Each structure stands twice: as C-alpha cells, then as structure tokens.
Length: 194
Image 1: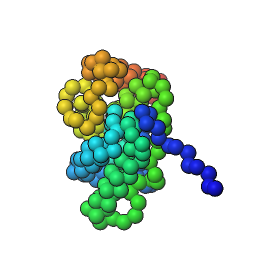
Image 2: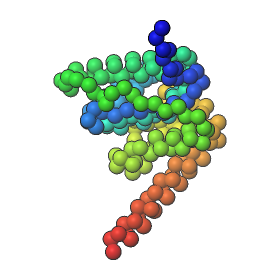
Image 3: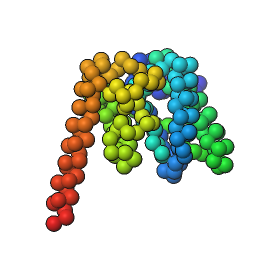
Image 4: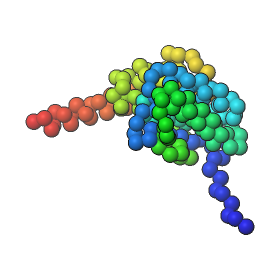
C-alpha cells in the first residue's frame, strides 16, 4: 500500500500563491500578456469556485492571495491558467521551454494579521520593484479596486471592507508603510553619504 499524499489545500483556507520566471526572466512581455492572463484568471476562478482576495502581476513574477472554496480548486486553477498562458506566450514570443521557475509556491496563511500585512506587501510590489512611484499607478494589480479607483469583478469585494472598513482606511494603511520606508531610505542616504 502506498503512502497517502498530504493534502495541500483546504476548503476555506487562505493561501499566498507566487512564482517567478525561469532564471528570473520575464513572464509578461507586453501589456497584452497581462490582460490575457487576467482574462484566464477570471475564467478559471469561476470554474473552480475560489475567491481571489488580492493579486499583483509584475514583469517577472506574480503574487496572489486565494481562498479555496471547493476541493482542489487552487491546484486546478493554477494548472489551467498558467499552462494555457505559458503555451500562448511561448507561441507569441517564438520561444521554447519552461516559462516559470518550477511549480508555483504556496503558503497557508493561518492568522488574520498575516493576511492583512500580505495584502499590503503584494500591492506595494510594483513600487518596491521600481516600476511605479505609487501602487495605484500599476494597472496589473487589484490595488486600484481596493481603494475605489476602479471597479473590476476579479477579486472578492467583501474582503477589504470586512477587514479595513473602507477603501480610505486601506489606502492609509498602505501609504503609512510606504512613507515610513521612504523616510528610512532617506535617512540611510544622509548617514552613509557623509
């Protein structure tokens, strides 16, 4: 009798899902690639009954927070979205081989305070990467939806108000951290430039 495989994802569980390009290479080559990936996410999110809480796609990696609402939803969602996506991008870019650095990674998020910090981390990813100055400037994240500047239906609309009360509160939560980090960098620069 073979040993049973450990269950990876639990119904009702929240997971941080992430991956990057093989060799840290690009996975999104142009704006149309991002749009295509988001369209696939929308299609398969409904098929596999899961809730996308937060997301950010950047040129060479992605981050999601997903709540699994049915058995095997996350595994099947990730397989269908990114197998379909990789085949289309390889064809478009006239490339062969793997697009991603192995199978996607995941962490089960067990504490509410961790999920809130992780939302902020994900939404600040494009700022940290130097792609934009403010998180709302990055089109390929759901931060503009969280702060009421866009009204997409990809992410779960109930999570933010249940946890932050309002889009204004969430924006303040994000900007407070961003301003603190910028102040730290400025102080470091002043200290080490002497």
